[in-house]
Image (cartoon, rainbow, N blue to C red; front, side, top):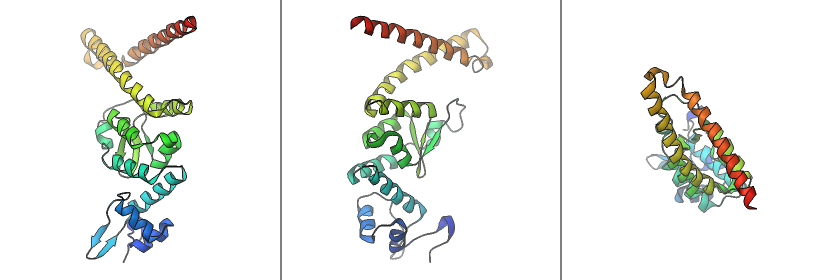
Length: 220
């Protein structure tokens, strides 16, 4: 018999009824790999809360215009995603605020730009990580900026490609400043002086943007 509460398990017919679909549809989703395999007890297949959550996610993504093929590809990328602990450094200090998202909330931010390729690219960059059935974006600021650019018409693939190029430069800047501070200050002062390095980069980037915009206007 199925358990009650968070650990409740469902037979196929019970899960289909709870999710508002037919057993035939549920079987089709399982055969397509859209949901994980059930737990088997003899000839009986038991489904848990994670299966119900996945079915509700599929329904939400279908409502947002995603195709079953796209959802299948996304599910495959999700299952192969990096663990959140690996991406966040298992408790290493960070000034960035991670954001926990469901797949449908991610679709709310980026719409049909949430493809398997873009998802895999974001995983590779370390922007996204998986934690059980949830997705974690490692930086609320980067999430908001990326979503704003997509809303302005910039393809998410282009945003991620630019982010990879930015990563190269920011890694070089971080190396420059940490080497500078390690050479001329005590090791324990490096974290304390971190805001100074950020201020220099922000000021230089602001002036570089001013110069670039002047060049663009001058060329028109």
